Each structure stands twice: as C-alpha cells, then as structure tokens.
Length: 435
Image 1 (cartoon, rainbow, N blue to C red):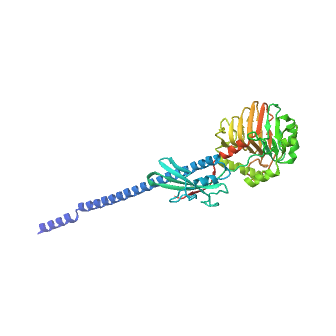
Image 2: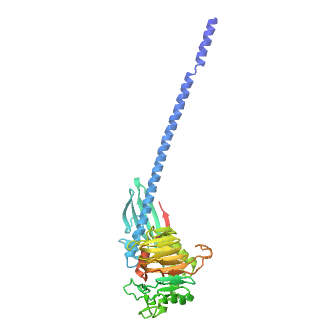
Image 3: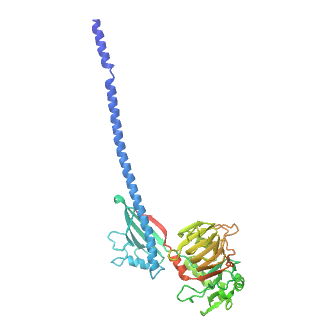
C-alpha cells in the first residue's frame, strides 16, 4: 500500500515538475516576436530608402531647374546685348510669343517658344520659358520696367520634376560723366609732365567723337575748379583735349573751361532720375558699391593686385570688387571697383569703368605707357571713423594723381563702358520654388 502511494507521488512530480515544454513555448514565442520585429524593420527600412531616394531625386531635379534658370539668365543677357533695343526686354518677350501672337507662359498647351528648349545636366533636362513680370502683367509683351520672369521646368531621375520661377532685372549702372570725375570737396588732381600723353574728353570710341561735349576732368564742387585748372595748366596743357560748345577741338591752353569744369546740374538730375543715385551723397555712392559687389565675378580682399586677380580682357569682361587697396599692373576690361587706394602702373591698358569709392584715391606710378579707355570716378565716402557703411559717412577730398613718369593716357570711351554693363547678366530679385 505504501509502495503504491509513493508511485503516485512520483508520477505527479514528473508531470508537474517538468519545465521542458514551457521553455520551448517561450522560445517559440520569442522567435516569433523577433521575426515580426525583423519584418517591421525591413518594411520600415525599405520605406526609408524609398523616401530617401525620392528626396534625392527631387533635390536633383530642383538643382537641374536652378541650373536652367541660371543658363537662361545668361542667354537673356546675350540676346538682349545683341538686340536693337537694349533698354528693355520687349523684343525678347515678343519673340517668345507663339503662333497666337500672345504670351501664355508655362501652362499646358502653351505655344510659347522656350528661351531654352533642351538643356541637359546630371542625367536630367530642363526647359525655360520667358514671361513678363507681375507688375507689367505676365502675358504682356511690352516691358516697361526692365524686369521679366524666367520659369525653369526640369525633369530629374525616375520621373522627378521641379519648377522654379526667377524674376530678373537688368543691371543698371550710371557711367562716369567724364574720363576723370572727382566727387567731393577739396578734390586734388596731379598731372604728369609728359608731352606724349593724351587725355580726351571727346568720345574716342564713337563713330562721331563730337557728340556730347565732356571735360577731361569733372569736379562736383565749384570751389575746386580753379585749383584743378591750375594743376592742368602746370602739366602740359596742350595734352588735354575736349570739344567746345560748337564742336571744335580745344586744349587746356585754348579753352580751360572746356577741359575742366563742374558736373552739370542736368547730368546730376539725369543720374538721379534714371538710376536713383544722388551723386553728391556718400550713402548713395556706397550703395552703388554694394550693388556692384552682388553682381561681381570676383570679390577680392585689399592688399592684392591684378597679378593674382583676373580683371578681364576685351571679349571677356569681368566685374571685380576689391575691398581695400589694389594694384592694377595687368591689362583688363570690365568694371573695377576699389574701396581703398587704387595704384596703377605703366604699360597697362584697361577698358571700361573704374570706380574708386571709399578711401577715394587713385595713384599712378612707374614709367611706361598706360591707357585707360572708358571712365573713372573717384570719391571719398568714408567719414571720421574711416570705415564705409557707417552713420558718419560723408563726402571728403578725392585724389587723382598721375604725376608718375612715362605717359598716362585717359580717354572717354562710351562703347567700352556700355559693353562692360551689358555683359553683366540680369540680376535675380525674386525666387519661387513651385514644385
């Protein structure tokens, strides 16, 4: 009997004390959870990869569209520069209108002619359409404000697309009123003693050099005129040439008032009306410098020279802005802006516009034959703190010193200045990413 009870207890213990089945169940459950987590991870990873790929494709399409807009900006510049009407984009808008003779813009079924029909980049492609700006009316073919809109439509990898709108306007810049323009009270001019030099106020690049009469040296303040004329008279006056009111050529010996005088009131008014610049305001001139900086091909630190900075060439004009002193010792062409002292040396030729605004000093040294064809403006616009763009900015005394040895020729050249300006692509003033 006792033996039977012990056997029964033993059987119960073997049944209830055996944990092998529980461990197996837990293990299977844990493996199922891991499998589910793995499946979720795979799904999420695939989704992340897909999202990442889509983002990458869309970004690539966006950059292709942006490149298309930049390409169109240069294309628009080149077409406008070659057109009969460089003062507006009306010709270009009319040419973009399709068979219906109207601008439709970038819409389904448009028959407008793309400014760029098949641009390719990085495995993508773009088309760029031209329309007027919102002020003139997008579909108006008459441009009244030198502002238009470029719509760049890009196709990227795997069906991605991007559309951007860029509103652009021409780069407007006034030209110096004379070959040498000195803005500010107490202007200093020093000429050299070479009989071989030529300084021309009459336009040496125009078919008809008579045109509008200009002095060789124009000053902003009447009180400086006697000192400038005396300096010219003491530096070989027969090497300065201009036209008198009847168109006859004169020199400083025969007509000193035609060679050096003040900037006319009509010229000041025209510059203010057409370019929004008060030539007698240090703040306005400093803003001109800021505007040119935004359009510059190169912005260089002070203390450098054209040995290290490319300043262009005929057919490849450059806009160069130098923040400080600069030495021009190589030929160049375009627009050169120097906020410090500009030193130029013999045997260099520069075609275009030279602005020395800030410290307001331009000095020539060394022998040789130097030629500047275009126009120069020198203005001291820093106040007592000697720093530009501060509240105390005020017109001070500009200096033009060409008393160095050798021959220094300066000639007014309208075409060199116009070319320098028209070679600058329209600047972007608004940007909209549509998709």
